Length: 107
Image (cartoon, rainbow, N blue to C red; front, side):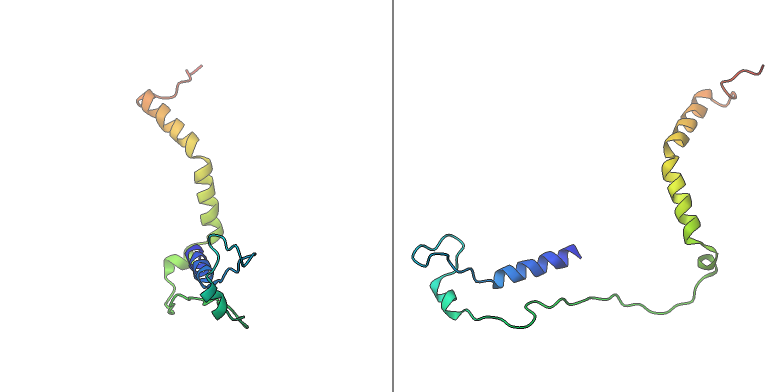
C-alpha cells in the first residue's frame, strides 16, 4: 500500500505546475513561462485510486483447518512469546545440572 501511495504522490507532483509568487523573480522549482501559458484548471478526479484485488478461487476446507481455532492459536503464540525467556533460562539450568537433578536438596 505504501509503494502505491508514494507512486501516486510522485505522479501527482510531476503533473503540478508551480506558479511563481512574483512573476518578475521566479525561484528555483517554479514552472517556466511556457508551462504557465499552457496550464489549465482540472475538473473531476485528478488521480483516481485504482484498487487492485488478488485473484481468489473457492476451495474445499481441509480437516486441519476445521479443527484449528483462531483464538487458541493466538493465545498459544502470545504465551510462547511471553515465556521465551524463562524457558531459555530453565533449559540453560538443566544443561548446567547435566541431568543430575534439581538444585534443591531433599530434606
